[in-house]
Image (cartoon, rainbow, N blue to C red; front, top):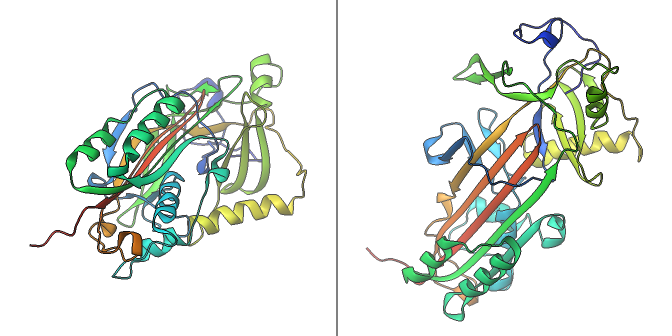
Length: 346
C-alpha cells in the first residue's frame, strides 16, 4: 500500500503512472460498507470455483493456494444455535468445523457498528415470522428464502444471521478504469499476472486541491518493505476506518490479523501516521462480487444436545456481498443453519 522509494514499473497508458511503482493492497479487515444496490460483477457459488473458499472461523488453517473469505455472520448464527441447544453444539461424530465454530464465539457487541439480525428458534414456534418482522424493521425487506424453508416441512429449527455495514469516502478516489494494476498470483506452481481494475491516487500532487483532499483520507500506519505495510483509509464519518494490509500470511487468518494488530500496538496508542508523498502512487484492487458457500462437511451430522438429540444438521450456508471501489465499501452477508426434523434412513 505504501512505498517510500518510487521506482519504474511496467504499467503504462496513464500519464500519472510514468516512473512509478504500482502498490498492491490485500484486504485483511473490513469494518464498513456503503449501499449495495448495484448488481455485483461476479456471482458464483464456491462449488464452481477451484481456488476460493470460506473459512468457518478465523482460526481455520489457511491454504496458501486459495483465496479465503471470512465474515462474522456465520459465527453470529452459530452463537444463536448454541443458545437454542443450551451450550456448545455437540455431534455424534467429531467434526473439525464444529470444533472451530464452538471455539470462536462472536456476539452482537462484536458487530455493534453493523446492522444485525440474528435469531434461532423452532419452526413450529414461529421463528421465521419473528425473523421476517425483524428483517423488515432493520433492512426494510423480508428474506424469501426463509419462507421456503418454513414451507418445506423438513426443517425443525433454524439459526440465522444477517449483517450489513456502510462506509463511504468523503472524496471519491481516482478510478483507474483505463489501466488497472497487475495482480500477481500462483497457479499450479507457476507465477501468473492478471490485470485487474483498481482505484487510488494516481501520482500524488500536493499542489492539486483534489489530491490534497484524497491524501487526507490515507494514513500509512506501518511500512517495513514493498511487500510489508499497513494502511488505513478514513471514511466520511471520521469514526470509521478501513484497514488494509499487505503482509505475509500466518497459518490462519487469526494469526495474520493478530500480527497486523501487534505491529500497530507496538507503535503505541498514537502511531506516527505517515502520509503519501509527492509523486507516489496508491493503487488498490477493486473487489465486486457475491459468493455463496455450503459447508458440506456439516450436512447430515447428528446432534446430541438434549434439546435437539437425534436431529441432523440439514445444511449450513453463508453468502457474502463485497464491493470495494473508489467510493467506499459494501459488506452484506447472511448465514443459515438448518436443523432437520429427522434423520433420513435409506
